[in-house]
Image 1 (cartoon, rainbow, N blue to C red):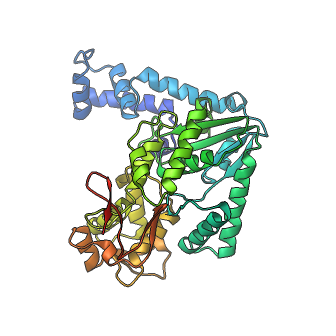
Image 2 (tube, rainbow, N blue to C red):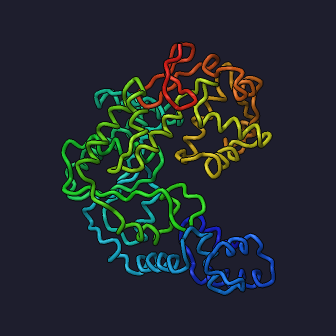
Image 3 (cartoon, rainbow, N blue to C red):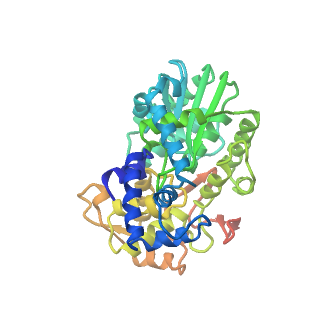
Length: 416
């Protein structure tokens, strides 16, 4: 795969001339019998005559990139290129428009794409740590303590950042127009849910840009990976949020902060057309509760499995494998991953052991401890050995005490 192909598969910017060249090269292989898999695909086409044509090769290339036909691929590329050449037409925002994102990963790209509005970040990782139903001052204090301890940040810095983000959020209510940029994963959907639920006074207009995939991108992780011109292409796809979306967010936020995960689990099974990605994200987040089988969350189980299968991988390799291959709905950044990994490494009865700790954490090799192998095999229950308190939303899980856990059907059960 060429460098251009790798880039387009990652950031969504497709070079049409390159795809035309690939189609011509594929046509030669088809005629010479050197593309058997593609030939098999063509044989299932009712229009295929048995003698490969350029149109057949183009169809195969379009199909590989996620499009139903070559004209669909070309229309997509034309739309993206038009957005890039006419940023003021595509990004017809104004300096007073507030763009909100749960991180700063698109701030620079928005400027390059021609956006003029203010950029605001709300990065509190609500998919991790305690999210109980508390008054704002107490809630912010608790979240600051969690961020400080989990991400090795001085407490004063964590509190200052947290207070600043929540103050900005309060000022959002006075904005004339706000646009929210979200992915389909739990990090983004919980950000969206919390943002909407806290709006007792609304801006004149709240719009949402929300995606789960981008044509041509092999493994879509999030909006932050996209090229500036693809962000401009997304702009016309925004939609104005209605009262149903705000009502759903308030219901979901209340359920997520409850000490019991039952209402949240039930909501995750519903159709949520006003916020279509919310229920699947809540369902994935539900799997961060311990399993009745081994006491592990899905992320913890994947970490252990990768470590066992790759044979002393580095932490960086485990993170890359988790994010790019194993995780069904990627939501962890690198620092979030390491914070979760430490809960399996630290403590008197760890499940993983790291080596070469003088190196930055991504370069440290890992292996499972004997207990880690037992837990992964379902022969020991992690929370019978863990020492740290764990939270998922408003659900508090204390090792050695009765707690909520998931059965094989992902139904929360009270484990005594």
